[in-house]
Each structure stands twice: as C-alpha cells, then as structure tokens.
Image 1 (cartoon, rainbow, N blue to C red):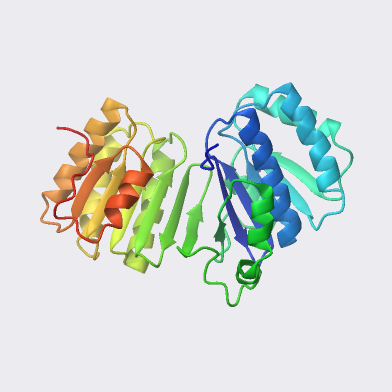
Image 2 (cartoon, rainbow, N blue to C red):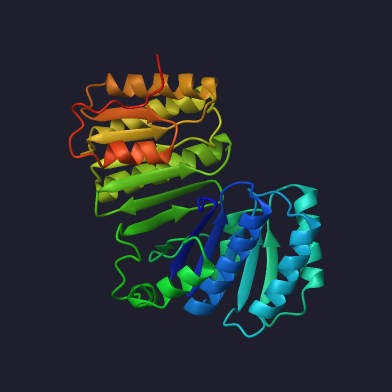
Length: 316
C-alpha cells in the first residue's frame, strides 16, 4: 500500500493538525488514513484539525459505518476543540459525510464542513492563512510505527515551537497551503517545492504562482520542483502571464536546477514546455528537465553530478 495519499502537517504553537487527502483511495487506504489522523490527534494533543477529503470522492457505506464507529471510540476523550472537513462540490460526498456525523455519537468538540480550505482555516484559527510553524509529519506504513515515531525524540521537536527545526531528516517546512496548492521548503538540500492539488481557475493559478515567487525571492533556494500532474492546462493568457513574471523573477534568483513533474496530458506538456523554453532562452542560467514522477525529479535534483545524467524528459 502506497502512503502518498495523505499529507499531514502540524503547528505546535496553535496545536493545529492539517490532513489533506491527495487522491481517490481504496478502502484499505481510507481506513488506514482515518486511523493515522486519530493517532496524530491523540498523541500530539491537537486542539484543532482540518481534514481535506475533497480529492477522495465518497467512501463506501461500509467504510462510512466503520469510520463513525471508530471516531466515536477513538475521539471520545480528546483534546480537540474544533474539527473541520473540506468537501468537494459533489452532492454525493456531502451526503456521505452527513451520514458519518449522524451515526457518530455526540462528540465533545465542534464540527463543521466547508467547501474550501481557506474557509475552514478561518473558522478553525480565525485566519485564512496557515501558521508559520507548520511541520510535516511522515506517514509510516502502520499506526503502531507512527506511535513509535511520535513518542520518540521527534515528538519533542514537533511539540516544541521554540526549538522545532523539523520532524524529519529532510527538514521540510510547509510555507503555504490551500485546497489547490502546497509550497514547501527543504532547507537541507535548498529545495523549494510547489505542488498543484487540482485543476484551478485563472485567479487560483496566479495566486499559487505569486506565492511561489514570493517564496523564491525570500528564501533563495538553489533548486525547485514544480508538480503539475493535477494542474490541467493553463489558459493562453495565463501562460503569457507566467512567462512575463517568471522571466523577471528568475533573473534575480540563484536557482541552478528546476524539475517539472508533468501529467501525461499532451496538451499540458506542449503548453508548459513552450513556456519553459521561452524562459530558458531569456539568458537565465539554470538546468531544467521534465519528469513523470516526483521520485524521478528528486533523484535528479539531489544527484551530485548531473553531467552524465539521462533525464526521463518529455520528448520533443
């Protein structure tokens, strides 16, 4: 079972847990994810949690019943004060989670549902922005393994807002997150990552790019990874806008490598590669390659010697 379906982050200062599901999941993955979130809440003594399930669809009736029973037992004596769910626009998913709530016993914390992550944040923390000290929580293959991790010395790093550098060896820090994009910084390898979580409209696309540009200018990383697998195809106007703002920004940055993870959509590949070519032709000195997975992109980004590296790039 792959563990790429759920991203967990925690703010020690706000006692806030963010759980964002990344894709449709199997019944086994769904139940594992629910148990994992509960373990994090109980072990970290989280008081506020947002669970974004907009990408997974509606769980089966059997999984809904098991979820209700599990939450009733696991969170009956909890530190939680508020719990928010971010749902998709589909009627099916909203009805599914209404059934979960009805089957659950009355919980000792407030529960609410939203259609956007920013609205959920506003209700949870009183601000549409993430706390500055969000720390990534790795997701092991079992909840027992996760408990051991959270009860180790790593726990002290997570819950100590003053001394927490990160909770993994990679020291990845979440800089920005919505329901459509995440931006994180790996300080150890000077890598900024921007990942689109779904197709976006023009406003969302430009907002995500602007946040990425702000992070580039502020942190001056040497490497960047852009994951466009769920992005879709930007409009011609947005492509032209990207060309203008990226060219201007990259000239003032120290980037040496940019890895782009594209989907298999030929239209997206053509559109974004054309923009990338025009940017590179603007006398900007960095290496760039296209990939079909983050694993391949990271392998190239972290390679010590790239002279003889054969990147699995999109063919011309």
